[in-house]
Amino acid sequence: MTWHQQSPPEPRNKTNFFIPSMREHYAGTYRCHYLSSAGWSELSDPLELVVTGAYREPTLSALPSPVVTSGENVTIQCSSRLGFQRFILIEEGENKLSWMLDSQELSNGLFLALFAVGPVAPSHRWMFRCHGYYRNITQVWSEPSDTMEILVSGVSRKPSLLTLQGPVVAPGETLTLQCRSDVGYDRFALYKEQGHDLLQRSGRQPQAGLSQANFTLGPVRVSHGGQYRCYGAHNLSSEWSAPSDPLDILIAGQIPDRPFLSVQPGPTVASGKNVTLLCQSRSPMDTFLLTKEGAAHHLLRLRSEHRAQQHQAEFPMGPVTSAHAGTYRCYSSHRFFPYLLSHSSDPLELVVSGGAETLSPSQNQTDSKTTSHPQDYTVENLIRMAVAGLVLVVLGILLF
Image 1 (cartoon, one colour):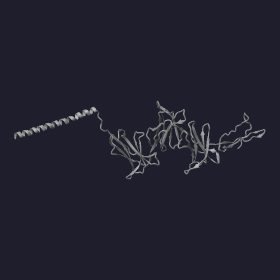
Image 2 (tube, one colour):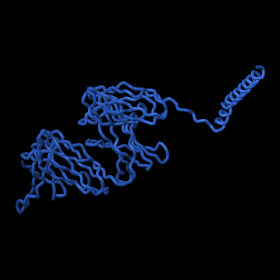
Image 3 (cartoon, helix red, strand yellow):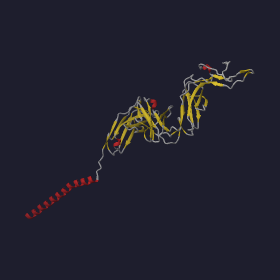
Image 4 (cartoon, one colour):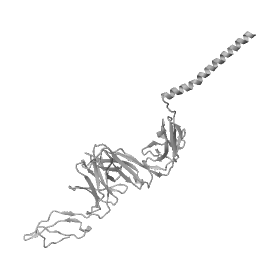
């Protein structure tokens, strides 16, 4: 394909060739040369013109996580099911670095390439996207993947991650995760293990010295189940904090089972005594979980035991206090799907009755005096009766 420009604009040492609407057939390698009185010049260095958007975009992810400790390497995976024979990874920014790799096909029909990047440092932002293409038309690429940012984490104090509703949610509900810190971070990031999305929110300060951000997820789907962590950062730094402790989000009603919850010795227990909550199922379950209503972080998990044709777990408690009182439910789960739960058991209400009251010393003294008077009166009456009996015996002897 050849273009001719006969009247170059000023300055006369360059000209433009205009393509009104980019199409796939324009993709390729281009060179130019000029004609002077001395004849045609040598060809220029080649220019590769690439057309993007010809195929659906691939998926870009980071292994094991898009949050990487400063100084470490990260593996970036570009994948698709369209059978691309090559993938190209592009780093966005001033340098516009790129890497190209042949794809490998997995047994499940997925084509992918793994790019080793690093060591990473917080000196700049690490932003990437990727394309896929075929060997016979190397200048026709797919649409770009979603841009992925690699967050570089450091050693600044980790924030706390909590859920306001509790860790067990049902499909269709709205789930809010809150990342908070007393460090005063300006922004927060939330990441789900083995997920692709990294959510970022600006922090707000509900009170002096405390910053937080809410991440609202929902309506809840099965894919929301998993383990989450969050990070904090200051606006003037590209380095993120150490990760929060992990938070498990569990999706109820996904396994066709409803365990039975009971309590021994009974639902009413005296303060200071021990009690055992028993969760049972006839289905072969691997794990049982016990939750308490109103306690967002009260979640107990035990391995199942097989006894008398029942799969069960015993949750011992004690010595119990008023804090143990409340409504409990239990769930079952399989080890292959640890974040998917059965339907809830029927609720069980645990009542903790008050123990013996502790009396003050003055009360004890008063009570001891009060209780000693009847004892004194009884002794005196016995003495009088004994003396009277003795007098009657003596009189009887004298008379007879």
